[in-house]
Length: 269
Image 1 (tube, rainbow, N blue to C red):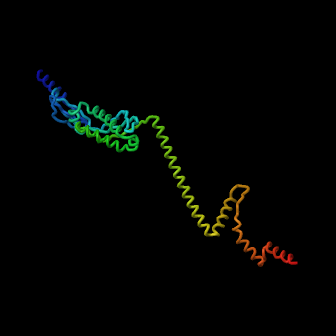
Image 2 (image 1 turned 135 degrees about the horizontal axis):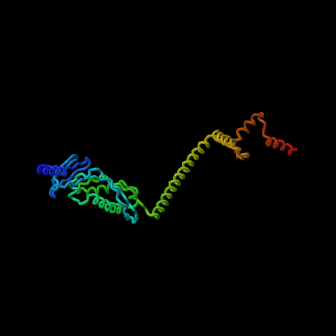
Image 3 (image 1 turned 90 degrees about the horizontal axis):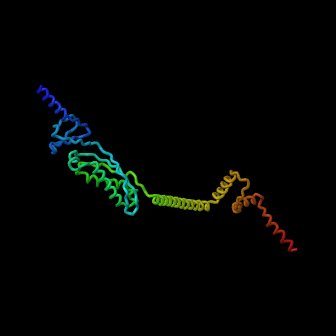
C-alpha cells in the first residue's frame, strides 16, 4: 500500500513538471530564483516547486502608439499617432532586464514620438515621413536593445491638424494651383504669339500663300450656320486679276483714261 502511494506521488510530481512549449515561444527557467537556461519548443520538464518557467513569445508584435499632442518647431499644435513593429530576440533579457517589456516599449515609443515630431517643422512632418519614421526606429531600437527587443519599423499613421490650419493649407494649395494655371496660360499665349509671328513672316514673303489663306478662311466661314458674313477683302489681291482683264480686251485703256483723252481736244477748239 505504501509503495502504491509513493508511486502515485512520484507520478503526480512528474506530471506537474511537464510543460509544452509552442514553436513561437521560449521558456525562461529560474531555479530557486536564479536563471539557469531557456527551454525551446516541444515537451519539456521542470522541477515542480523548484523551477519557475516564464513564457516569452517570439512572434512580431504590432503595437498601436496612442495619439500624442505635439507642438512642432514652428509652434503648430498637432496630434500624431503611430504604429510600432517589434519582436523579442533574447527572451532572458526581456525578463531579467525590464519588469514589463511591452509596457516599457509602449511608453518609450510615446515619449520618442513626441520628442522627434517636436523637433521638426509642420512641412517636414507632412512631407518627410520616411525620414521621421527612420529616425523614430533608430532611437527606439537603440534604447530597447538592452531589453532584448528588436524594433523593426515605426510608421507615423495619422497627423491631425487644427481646423484653422487646415483652412490655411487649403487656401495655400488653391493659390499654388492658380499660380501654376496662370503660368501655363501665359506660356501658351507666348508660344501661340511666336507661332503667329512665324506664320505672318512666312505669308509676307509669299503672295500666293496669303491669297490661299484668305480663300481657306472664306471656306471655313461658309461652312458655318451664319446667315450674313462680312469679310474684308484687300483690293491689293485684285490687282493681278485686273491686269489680266485689261490685257484680255486688246490693250484698251481703262475708261477713266479714255475720258481724259477726249476732254483735251474739246478744250483746244
